[in-house]
Length: 117
Length: 112
Picture 1 (cartoon, rainbow over the protein chains, first blue to last red):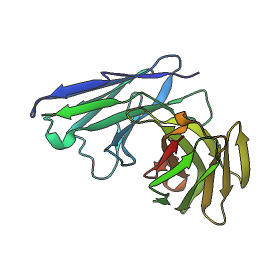
Picture 2: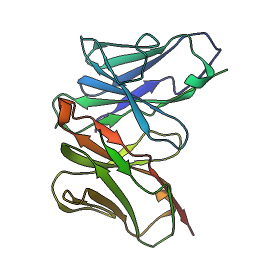
Picture 3: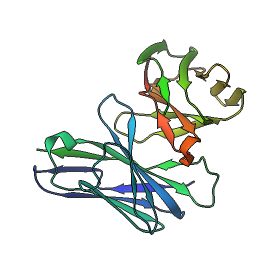
Picture 4: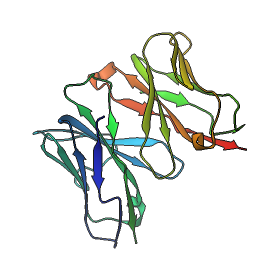
């Protein structure tokens, strides 16, 4: 089956620093990847849609200069949280669509737990 | 956008049957998903309904009524490992994005 990995799985950083999270599709090519944020006992909130070779599309209310997304290849998208603050502490999950698959199939990564101190 | 409503929490007994409901409002319905999410893990796909009716897959079944804006996930022969959050997600074709919007999830607790 399609596998999506994320790295790191957990990260603790100090306020004001930047953190990069990687999302990789291991056995398929993903033209589109999605980045979600999930607070405790809350739903997954879509942050942005990342398309290979083009700029990401951000959801309303998500600061594109704070959450930098790069989708440089068909198997890798990165999310960089710049100048992190404690309120950015959350569970970040990526997902990817297999470009050969049906349009509804979306494979999720295992998530990254970010804690900003 | 969509309004997706599902119960916050449910409890059930091992071996029993539980039905988790989801209601939604959307202008351009294009499919409904159910995902299972264990604490601290990513969601895993359970089902996808785009037409009315019941889809059965092992112990799990999912039902959709588009006219009523309603779906349910039915879990049979409950096992302790079924304790998890169950997310209903609706895809909307308006705007062309076809990206699902997730409900808050229903936390299911299965006890012996």
